Structure formats: C-alpha cells, structure tokens
Length: 120
Image 1 (cartoon, one colour):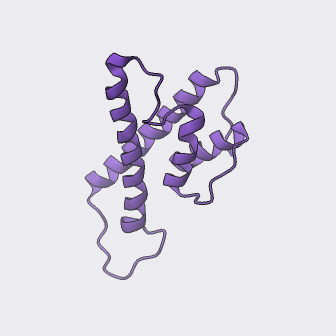
Image 2 (cartoon, rainbow, N blue to C red):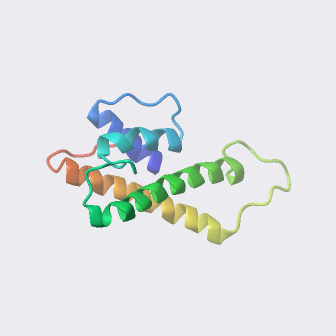
Image 3 (cartoon, one colour):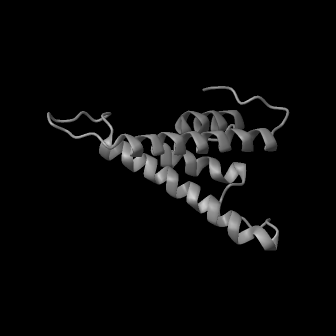
C-alpha cells in the first residue's frame, strides 16, 4: 500500500520515480515534495523536536516494513520448512504500513486540497 501511494503522489506531481522502486526508495522520494523530511526548519520551536522525532520514526517504520518483507515475506520464494513470522508481528507491520499510507494521503489532501490523488 505504501508503495502505491508513493508512486501515485510522484506521478501526480510529475516527479521522476526513483531508481530504487522499493518502499524505502519511493518513500524517500515523496518526503521532500510533501514536506515530510525530519530536517525541515519551518516548524514552531515548541514542537519542532517532537515533529522531527515522529517524522524520523515514520522513516524507521518504512525501513522496517521493507526489511521485514525481504526477510520474512514470500516474494522471493522460500525453501521447504520456512517458518513464517508471528501473526502479531505481521499485524503490526500491516497496521504500520496502513498508518503510513493514510498519513501520506492526508498530507496530500492538505497540501493539494483541489487535486485528487489518482491511483497509478
């Protein structure tokens, strides 16, 4: 879901897709145009650290989702006897990805209220 939202945002903005089209590469490509970089300097002093911490956490979540997919998913094929991850961890990854995707959509809607975010 995160990859699809990121791809749609980049296409709608006319931004080039990154060379690395995995979840980390796509998320990194949308951070700047959406103003989601933890390095942003336009925040009120009393909340700047907190917002930067949360934005940095989103980056960590995206990296974790991508790594978990690589190491525990079945997209790359698995040998007989492969033990899947615990259902709780799978749910955590799924809900985390949903949260990131929804935040990206809501950020798009706030930044571009008159533009639909079409699926690409």
